[in-house]
Amino acid sequence: MEVKNNLKLNIKYKILNGQKIYFLSEDEWQILLREGRFSIFQFGIRSINLLKNKDYPISKKYKEIFLGIGFVPSGFCLPYTFLKEKDEYLRIQIEYRRCSNCSKKIIIGNSKDATIYVGIPDYINKLELMKKSDKLIKKSCPNCRDKKFSDLAIWSVIDV
Ligand SMILES: [Zn+2]
Figure (cartoon, rainbow, N blue to C red):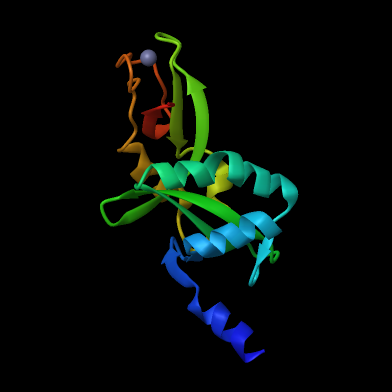
């Protein structure tokens, strides 16, 4: 029991937008992705598959992308993806897009999806958070620089 409690206490976390977000080590992620649970965290198969196929490999490939876990008031835990911009962690949803001009497959970090703000306490102004992200929006395709690319992306890379 003591070991288990120590384990809980040893998981690193940061308070981001008033919400406690846990950052697991590589070994801890491996257990969670394999077993569907680790320490106080548990995810359903759908979430695990989504993480395995999308957010987790992207967070490994791009050093500015971080994966964290937080809890919502109902007690469920949710995975969150962040873009680290200077010292700030900005919430994003990773999405695959295709540029309508050059047809290249692009990966974007969408800061406008409401689900990424779930779990933030009521006293934090979510609209202000979104406005902050608005300033970083990249409106041109990372491949062809076409301007009609996306009005959602605060991060974008060519999918290789
Ligand atoms: Zn393009």
